[in-house]
Image 1 (spheres, one colour):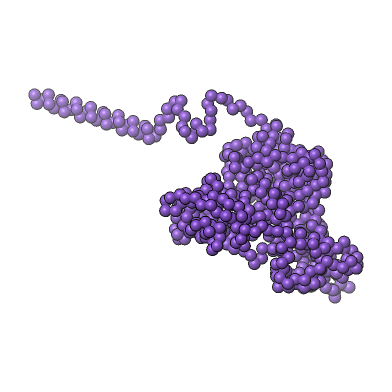
Image 2 (cartoon, one colour; image 1 turned 45 degrees about the horizontal axis):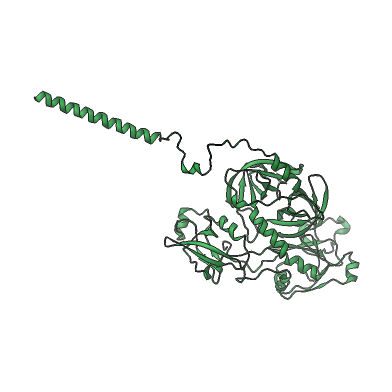
Length: 506
């Protein structure tokens, strides 16, 4: 009896041990090798894949054929000019050295900058010859030439430019021209095929293929006062000369303007960046309708996206879904709608936003006076508010051409008289009779200067100057001469001087 009990205990112990070992080995097996049931498709795959059909190979031929005729080669020229900002003074050593100044900057005589030439790409967006490109492609250009893929060339005029988005609009005289249809950059998805089309390295029109590798990228390349960066990132090969060219989907529709590359060498190294077409459309429409981009502001500040956890903790920035508001501008649009410091912005008109560039991209599509829906989370509860966006000055007015002259602060300007113009070989210009105490005072421009151009655009009278400055933003270049002195001169003028706010305020 005693032996039977011992055997029973041994058998039970052995069975328990075997069962435990079997169960534990199964547990480990499931931990190391997760089970995937054959034929079962996870929900995240079911949204995108139809296993009953074969998608077939991707064919880029139609997109390339439709797009390349509407992408143009842009070549620019900046005339030879004096590089310093003071009139030439007589050099007492000229009898010994001719025009050479061996004493460097001891004298104020201007040094001559040689003629500069550059090239890039552009996209025709209408059959009558409107072209969109990057501002940096045509910046400071005195002459802009456009060549189509069929090698037909045109002289182009600058309609308007916006340094904040790095976009510019040109016009050539033509009719029945090929042009690209606008796509919808909101519908662009990660992994989708795209083509980059342009004129890299001064080659003929070139198409390269890649995929969308990211959206809402900010790389800090735009150094303007109020930069807008929310790039589409691709791995399509882009090189110098591609700037201003087209990024198109496989249907040949424009989804972005190629703008930059991320590279340690200056040439393609894996990633390129394009301005989303939904921003492009808004900027183009504003430049054509108003002559200046109508930029709206929400009136909030938020942290940079690359802050470390320690920095966030130090500044009291909480973690959560959306964009944490660190401040609300007094009498700004957000404050008027009830948003407060500490709220998390989650959506703009129903579109989810989680980073600063994404918020920038959404707000950049609107103008002062537009009403938008802003969803935000406060104390764990999501709420929506209707916000009427304002301009930088805190009102709802649009920026109108011509008002910029009011900010020259007592400067006295007049159209140069015909005799002075003829004597100096000028077609016209604007004489600066008095500098005043406005933004002209912050340049090295001297009384008596005759303005003959703004950013390469000829200025023959006061009305032309008013129009040129009213259509510009950020820093412009005033070009002209000093009657009686040799050479031409150029002075940078910051139109936003004295009107800067928090760089992170949107």
